[in-house]
Length: 380
Image (cartoon, rainbow, N blue to C red):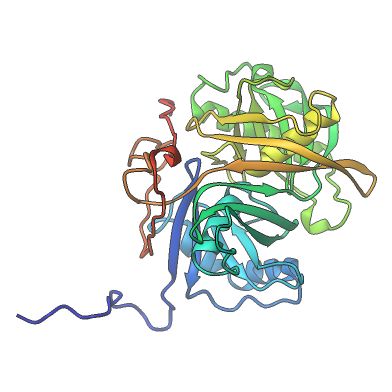
């Protein structure tokens, strides 16, 4: 009997189409597909130029990674590229079902682990409990701090955001089927509209996800049509990414506040949304509801996963009084060992959160304290 080949082989494929190797992760249930090899070179002198190049010339790669049969409507991805910033360890382009994003917090939390585990950053000194990973996102440089042991990740990751600020508060918009609605708009690397679900006659914790999606999408389209988004630095960043429906509990509390984010083409974030948490903290700080270094917990109504966040310092950003926000969460390598309790089929909102591609799966979780704490929403 012939012995198996020493090196695994990919199935036959068209040599004109390079095989894409990826690593799949998730943070709080929100997937992240990281391209390991096979993506054509993304050309451009700056990261934003590279993003424009990929949109114009390599969008077929995004579609191949995000859409069925290899992905699904709510898949999220990352293509790693060189950065022009001297202090950056890596640059990243974020992919989703509609196109490209300026910032993604859940992805940064996952990429921090990935960069350390795959040797994209220098190994931390012996005995170090945390490693620094500087990630150049389209919105700017984001510092991720990765808990580690023996040079490997395993615990939570935290990041320090780009300057986050409130753009508009108490903005009255006319939303079809809902009438006049008061919304806030804030920036956390991406712009979001914020509105309490109660103002739309909904409950962010119990209303069916489809109804929350429809309402959030209606708010997004109304804001886009009735309000001009401006960014202090770049027109590439001046767009509304989505709407976050909240439970309305904006005043500081030790109890978690719940929200759900609907972004891009009605894509539902399974996590509490890292850049959304950043923007929401900036908004609460602007309104005087939160002080520096007061930590709040933010819970996803889709899965029950939790991020924590706090404003760590005040900065000036253009004409805005902004804050640097620290967001913390736990990322996991997908389809891994028992410590990760995200069971198949438990969190299907519209399409299964499963992977249909050749993946390199690694797992470094070490103890029960690092379990992925997700709960089924029970809502479709």
